[in-house]
Image 1 (cartoon, rainbow, N blue to C red):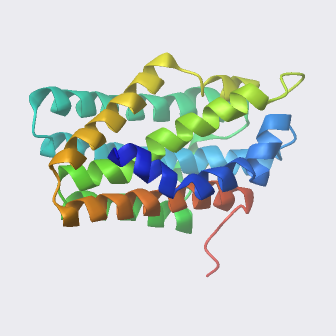
Image 2 (image 1 turned 120 degrees about the horizontal axis):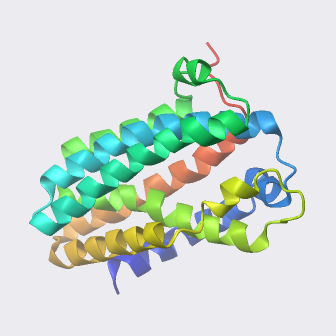
Length: 221
């Protein structure tokens, strides 16, 4: 069985739990509290900045030049998306740039990005690709679900929802899946076990990231 098929099967319960989250349900209906969404996109901007660093490490570790280039382009895309957050959605949802820049990462955001960075430094290319894959793949699948089920009637989040459907992003996700499958075929038993472990852990963090936004998570002390 291909790595991606088995890995997704392992996290199917997490994916279904994400679809049932209040954050996702209320984003679909347009009833999500504005403060929660503001919290989410600020933390998402922080996350993307660190995610770009992880992708840069992956690019440096890539065994083939074309793979290096693909992940280098992903770094650029992550930075561009972060800028678009500031320029477009921050303005639209009343977030001042200086306030966003002064915001610390939430505990979940910090733990998630630290996990990815530590994995990138500690492990090889294959294992690190497996760790970042849930961010790409779950985001795409959840985005498709939201786009298909969202109420377009007076949904104040429609512009954000529309960003989920992007052919270039879907192509990028499919490429990362293919790379993970290719590397898994060459992996040792131990490496394959670690690939599954980090994929599962990152998927848990995906659920936690949405939940932390809904809870307006902050440092308690």
